[in-house]
Image (cartoon, rainbow, N blue to C red):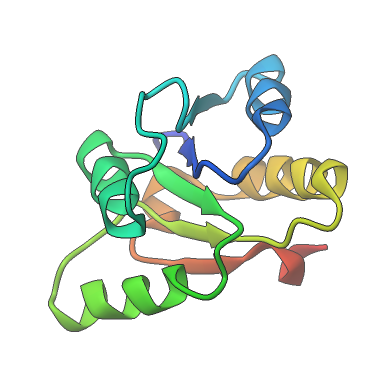
Length: 117
């Protein structure tokens, strides 16, 4: 089972990527991918093309984009939505999530990270 690769939307703190990498996970930030300023759909399309699940704090738009893709019979590697209140808790919870699921498990899934806390 392939491991989840994560792409962090530009509003997600880069320290979450570092925490993931320190524990052996693949994580790519928007800044590292030179995608700062891209639209939500462009960020999602980049994640899809590169086989990354996306982590975002944009709870207003990404669930809608998920349902648009599913309705159009398009696929993604996973959309994980979190809130910004506690980045350390987000990192801990995300580490638990990626250790439980494989990349295959996350395909076309919309996950609200706060439900895992």
